[in-house]
Image 1: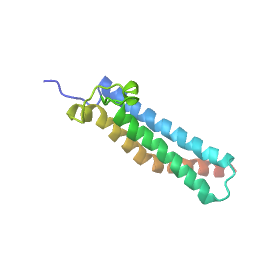
Image 2: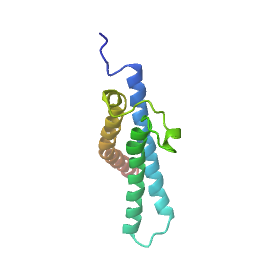
Image 3: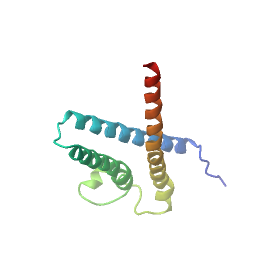
Length: 131
């Protein structure tokens, strides 16, 4: 009987894809924030609202629709042409192949804001020490 290891080639590729989705979300979030600096909003709350909506859409598309729709085998006219279609329903195989990717992305996204804050404060402290 072959046991599943957390460090097989397929798992490492899955972990790499999870990190790639998080990095893409981070870059898109930073891009939206920088774009809101270019756009002249009349109030700061309007700028923050735009950032929140854009970040929500990025996370919804990456962690929601992409992971759920891509591997499903559905017979919808437009979606059927875009998907890989190997799972008929949410079964044990879907959870073992796709579910852990979603959990990885969500866990990485959960620890990113504190890590980003620590990095930001460390950079700020280094900049202050140089002045």
